[in-house]
Length: 408
Image 1: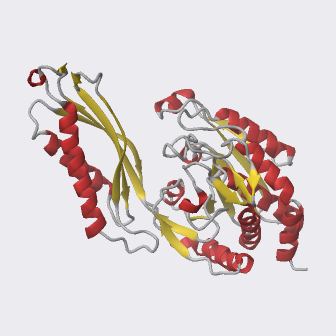
Image 2: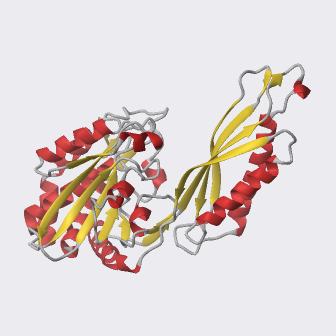
Image 3: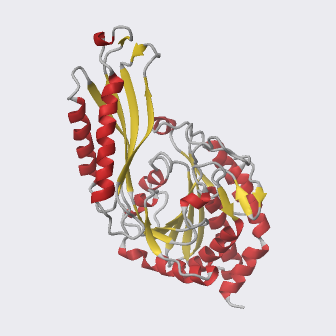
């Protein structure tokens, strides 16, 4: 047997244990918001320790967590040092998840299995890759017994809110200093670039009034509608006039995901707040995108007498652009992905944004690869009945174990 086939055999022999491990992670909620994520980290650390993978706990100061709009965060580092020389490779998966929402036919925290699929919030994004990376490391150590290099498994809890209390905090405090990194993703492509994301909160101020005498007030909702119409017209320009040259990424786009306002049916609304999400292609300049949007909103508001606006930046996540040094990662994953999955594994961009950008901004080459289907849509990520095909979990674990063997 070759080392690769021995790694595969070890993963097959321990796959039931791997699935049970993932089920335990899914059964502890880590919904963000509200972002009380330390209990999940504590449970994850217990599970890792039980496998002989010591998890260092790194609680984030409460004031920083609260400033980010969250309740508690403890990040984990599982550090495996094999010997002098060689590369330090970081593997990063996040445990914070969006709340389950409505429409589930399975318990979102049950980890139920049906027809070869495991159901639950974060089954595909990205508690699955706590499991993928952990069991790839265990296989590597059991079979290949690496003698040089290091692996830092980073289990973080701030991907949904931008990463400042997650990987950014670990990197800023020099708690991890990898040469290469891989982050949670899907199995059928290696992601080397992704969109950026700007999120703004826009508050439109008018003057409340009785609905029987509307002229005595200033309708904030009417003004907000004018602003929204201008923003949606801008989105149409993005769709038809701007195209990315990165395969897998199409064009910029803008969505308004939340609107709040008014006090009662018979009251002219004096304040309306909405939150927008602007996805930026790698070719765009984030500073210019934000300046243009702010100007557009203010100019439109100025057309309505008595209306003022406040604009607050909630998030600015830069796009990820591929670094030349990512070639060893890409080549290893493509080589073993094709061998294990039986089809070519392309290197693409994705319209999502991820924590990988935080590493790439510091000059650390990174890619996105893990367990999951070809598309977010197939996985039901951020929707009801999120699911993971267990055979994808098994095969992705083999691809990662083989690739780590090559890289170390």
